[in-house]
Length: 306
Image (tube, rainbow, N blue to C red):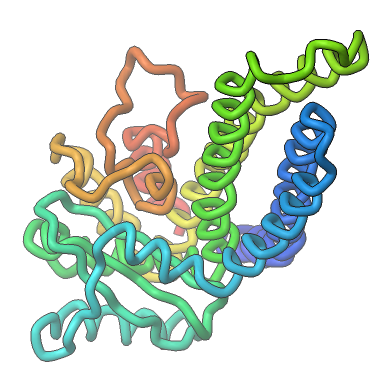
């Protein structure tokens, strides 16, 4: 039996996620503050720096309290009625009880592409969203595997960190683009007598602005990929049937049409990349999810270790 070792890993993962969430928020504050500092120094306007700091604090608060609502709105998810999605409700209720978790809110996305994600700031305010395509294509054991995977994200305390990434990384990219455009468009109207110091500040500011969204994207990719492996393992342990999730992943990966509401900001939240853009010709470094074939192989290997 390998469950004790795996569960110890889960508990270690849970405790580290809180620290990583605060680290991400601190990094966001530093990046936005850095952008604001260089732009304010470049234009000789300290007010820009203060505005950047205030904005970054507000966005950190928003990412904690409202990231789930932002994600659900971006995904066009709607609350699921129990009488209409009875099987989904019973599966989620039973697995929530087994996992010792409160029943999450359940949302449905009207999309034929099979997929699912979890979001929220903690287990008491968690959401599981699935597509109509997932409900149509999976049988009950496969649906249990997917829901167990998403409940594992909740139990492992991934959801706040992964949801905050949507808000914070997205705004780093937007702010960087705004600053960069303003610097280019106003380049001809600046005083030309700032000297070498002004030139150095301009270069450093442009470099920081260009690198910020790249760094933010790499953070998003690193966060999501590691968590998918652990959620697969935790979900399989919860159902005691790894084959259910493995079969579900096969069906999900076999559907090659992107989701209608898919976008790069929320792609890392889903159980499988909703953009369907990853392929053998694209480096794994730039994939939001680990290879499906590798995840299936690991899950089926668990059948012999129970």
